[in-house]
Amino acid sequence: MASWGVAEAKAKFSEVVEQAKTKGPQQITKGGKPVAVVVSMEEWKAEFGTDAPKGSLAEFLLNSPLRGSGIKIGRVRLDPRHVDF
Image 1 (cartoon, rainbow, N blue to C red):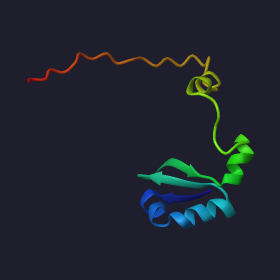
Image 2: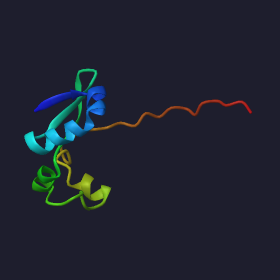
Image 3: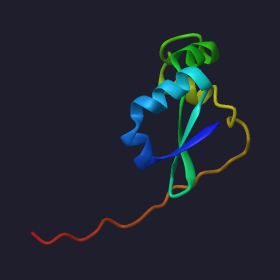
């Protein structure tokens, strides 16, 4: 998979899209770390069978592979900040 920095991908967006279409997924990095992937519509449809994901956010979360994994995400409870009026 080819890799593009954010600035380079922005400057050469047409080329990134063309490469995704002809050569496969194109990875976008920021600060050297992968942050996104550009794929062709053909590849998207092959993976998901549609132009866009269907269903609600709730359905997506219910079908998540992480569901039932035991991951616990705690909520940070902070006091409201004081604002003078």
